[in-house]
Image 1 (cartoon, helix red, strand yellow):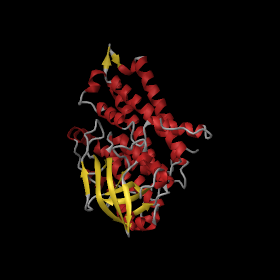
Image 2 (cartoon, one colour):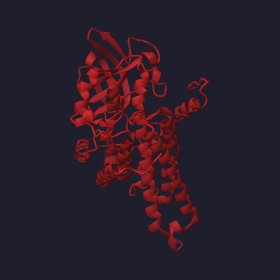
Image 3 (cartoon, one colour):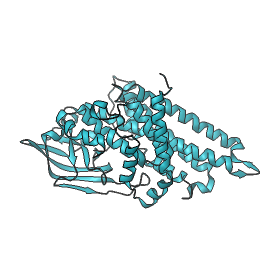
Image 4 (spheres, one colour):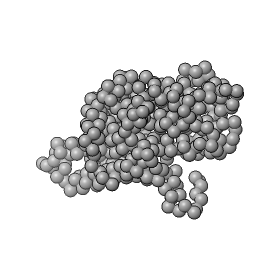
Length: 387
């Protein structure tokens, strides 16, 4: 695997770094107020040409693949020290738009042009109050009524629910049990019967809502159908892009934590010399960087081996995400510790970086579930439960 970026990828990375850096001074205010000017963020990312980075050119996107997606979000995360500037990329090129790429032609024609252009943006509505890791236990229903589907149920932790109006929503069709009954429809938040609640306040990842999407006799047409029941595997193929987004988060935030710690220990002196001169300190930084480089190899392999260059394969992206969710919080906590008492004050960014890291440990799949997934690949003849 060639790890050298092409000139086009280097240019993309530099653009994303510049955009991310332009938001760094705002990240503290977004976190403390739990409010962010999302449209301004979205427009800035759009002006830089970073929307729809992994959508094919024939659909109006930049024509990149999984690797270009990873490069972009990693740079935005690292340089902004915030999760928010990568959200417009996620909402125009992440799992929701990717579901449209592999889904029904009618839904793709209806929604993808507006998403790719930035006129609209797309959340993914997957988790339910009673179905998180147990995804196939979801109970939000879609009952066929002529040329429409009637939706009822509640989705939770819908990131962007208060700023994006489209929701690629996993539902159970006509009461069919298990994975074979699950498909997806597009739900416009403006439809009658849709209620959007802001949801709980998070430890980190603040600024826009991770809200509840409540559906009460909501009617959508057959041209809103993304994937029919029986196509659960295709949906999860698109969902793997969310896990690649998680990998970009862990890379970018681990690098941001390293940046903050290395800068601090170079200028902070104790006992007449800079902290970095102490073996325990520079050994800690060396360990952090080796973990970052190991994560980079796993994440870039997941992107580079993606199916059609666009959809990460389950085994590779699961391993990378699991490693990121394991070492990422360790890196951010060690970086905080190297700041001493100042690390837990709001005067320093590292406490916010660490809170965002902790918040993301279970996003896109809890580590225990990921470990079971990895084990299933290692022992294909053995059936593992989720218990």
